[in-house]
Length: 86
Image (cartoon, rainbow, N blue to C red; front, side, top):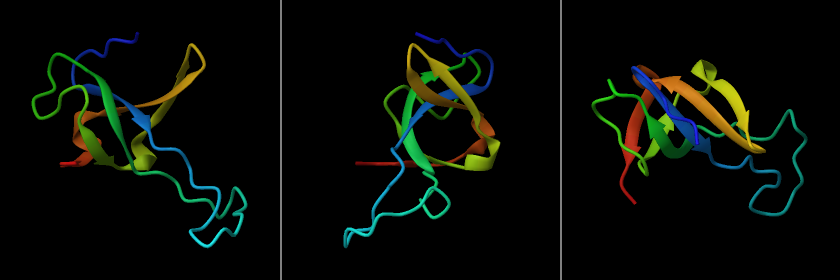
């Protein structure tokens, strides 16, 4: 597992929707970019988040990471907009 340091947050993003609710298949250009995901690791200086939190983030601030065939996104804590209570 990857352990974040400082103010970094590691997230598993939601999967990209490839079809609309009515079943229309979207091209990669039309597919929605996910802006929500689950926190899997936080650095020692992260104050507001913990593992397992479901969050909204700013996708343009992401650094993509693939580890053991799993895709993750890494952000500074300040790029996390909100926590969602399920």
